[in-house]
Structure formats: C-alpha cells, structure tokens
Image 1 (cartoon, rainbow, N blue to C red):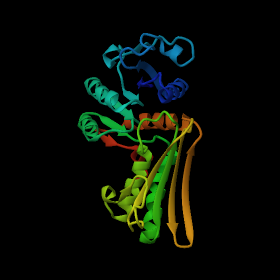
Image 2: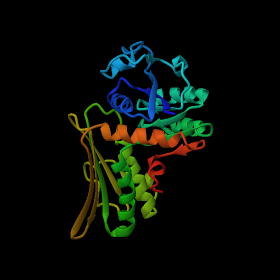
Image 3: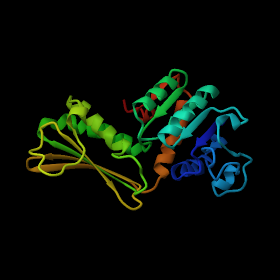
Image 4: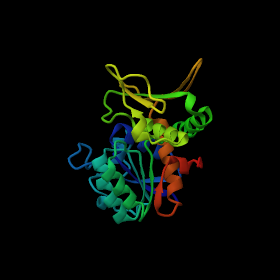
Length: 268
C-alpha cells in the first residue's frame, strides 16, 4: 500500500520540488497540500500547483481539511509554521519529516515533545551527499587533530532568511564534537577590525548570500604547509527533495522518536 503523504509548503520553491518528485514515485500517494491561511494557492487543486492535470487533491490551510488518512507529512517552511504544523501532526498521529532551518530553542523543544508521540525526522539538510559530509568532516577533524585550523564557508541565494545555514551549524557541531571542544565557546561568526591571533580551538563560520546560489558548503582544514578542503555543491533543489522522500519511506517504519538523516542513511 502506498504511503499517504501531505506536503506542507507545497507551493513554495522547495516544497514544489518535493511535490513534483512525490507525484512520480509509485510508493507514495499525495493526499493533501498544506499552505498558510490566505496563501494564493488556497483551494486550488494540487495538480495545478505542480503544473500538472487536476489530481482531486486541494490545497488546505490545516491538516483537518485533509479527508484521507495521513501516514506522513513532509515540511519545508518557516519555524513558526513548522511549530503550528507539529500540533496538527500530533492530532493526526502522522510521522513528520521537516527540513525547516532557523529553529530556536523553544521550537526545537516543541519538536522534541512531538517526537514522544510520533516518529519525526528533523534535518537541516536532506541531501544524501551533505549528510555524508557531516560524517567525513568529523572523521577528518578527529584524525588531523589540533594542529589544523577549521573554517566553514557557506553560500546561498539572496532570499535565504537565516544565517549561518543550518547545514553549516551542523558541520560545526560535528567537528567540535569530534575535537572534544564546546562549539558555543569556540565558534567565530566572521571577523573584522583587529580580532587578534586565531584561537587554537576556534571554528570559523562565514555566510555568503548572493544571487540564486542553491547551496554550497566548504570545510577548510588549514595546517602549516598544507590545506585540505571538503566541498559540497547543490546544483538544484532536487537532491534535497529526493532525500526528503527517502526519509519519508524510512520514518513511517520507526517508533516514536526524534531522528535525523544520519539515522535514515545508517551513518551512525
């Protein structure tokens, strides 16, 4: 039986790519698209939103407007919208896959509370390649040791509202954990003036915003006499969408709990 899915934010840039790939996957069945109240897509057929023929599935403002049973919801939206969605997901006893970034402490706590009731995948980046980068970067940091400086540079399109990216922050956390140092005491978010010599455990994180860059992340390990760089470039949003669908198929088989793409991909 196909997995019954609702796409939250299905009329957006990222949600639209999820919607397009979902409609091509025989293991998944679209049963609803959710957008915020007042969105111009409200009431339209989801097929029209996806640039296809009518599907008989309407864009609704709340999950209560979805008449079918729901197995899972995939979400790419804003923090406030994700938290509002979490309550509706709990009421429908559906699994949740969310790639929303910029979540604060209270918002993360709301998802942790949700995960006590239903399985939830929370990942700042759904790309398979990026999640492999998390593991590789930690392994490299652990192997190189303290003699190499770490700098993370991320670049995204001009419309991205949070900085640094959730992916860059996750990279910094993984590297700090591998080196056995607290990130909050060693993160450096850009430099200006005369900051003085670099601290030994400093992890630099720089955000670039320009044009239509989908997403680029570089982790630089600089030693005396050599430099090692790990680079991931996203050419389109399709890799994030396909990763989210992979997470959907995995999470519906799991017990309640909070997971990420490292769990989905078996990289723990």
